[in-house]
Amino acid sequence: MRIDIITVLPELLESPFEASILKRAIQKGLVEVHLHNLREYGMGNYKQVDDYQFGGGAGMVLMIEPIDKCISSLKTERKYDEVIYLTPDGETLNQAITNELSLKGNLILLCGHYKGVDQRVRESLVTREISIGDYVLSGGELAAAVLSDAIIRLLPGVLNDETSALTDTFQDNLLAPPVYTRPSNYKGMEVPKILTSGNTPKIEQWREEEALKRTQSRRPDLL
Ligand code: ADE
Image (cartoon, rainbow, N blue to C red; front, side):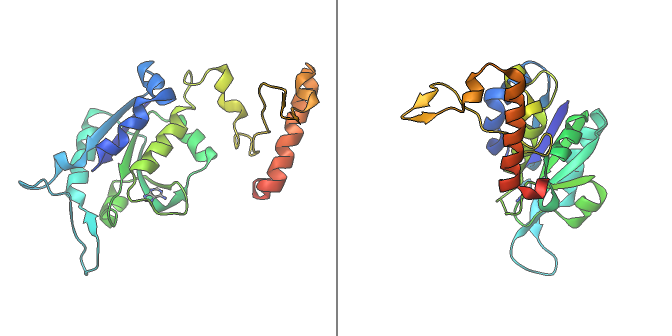
C-alpha cells in the first residue's frame, strides 16, 4: 500500500510515522507514506495556497489550483483508489471503513486548513470525505495521522500474533474484554481465577461474556 498525504504542515505529520508500529511497517516495506507540501504547488512568488472567500467572511480557503496541480502530478505516476479529504463534515470514521480502506492499493489523503478547501476541490477531485469525530481540529493533519494509523496496523505483516487486530475492540462490533498481567494479586486486588486456571475453552467463554457485558453497559448502540 502507498499513502500520499497533501498538507500545508508536513512537519506536523513527520513524527507519527517515525515511531513504533508505523515506523516498523514502513521499514519492512509493507507501506510507503509520502508527505507533500502543498506550498510547493503554490501560486506566484509567494507560493500562495489560500485566499479570502468569495462573499466575504472570516477565514482563508485553500485554492483549487495548487491542490489540482499536486493531485494531477501524483496521478501521472500511478492510479489511486481514493482521494480522501479529511473534514469534520465527512462520514464518521469507524472500524468498517478502516477495514475497507486497508484493502486498497494507493490512497491520497488531503488535509484541510483554515476554512477548508474550495468546494470545487470536493466536487471534482475528492472521491471520499472522512471525519474522525464530531469535534473540530485546527487542520486535517492529525485526522490523517489517525486514519493512516488505523489502516496501516491492519495490513498483513504489520502486527504480530501478540498484537493481532482480530481481537481488537470493534473488530466484531464488540468492545474488548478486560485484560490482566502480573502480579495476580496486587494490594488485595485479585485477577479473575478463571484466567489463571489454564482452561482455554473456559477462558474464551469468559472473554466472550465479558466483551458482551462491557458492550451492553458502555455501548449498547453497537449491539
Ligand atoms: N479537520 C478538522 N476537524 C476534523 C475532524 N474532526 N475530522 C477530520 N478532519 C478534520
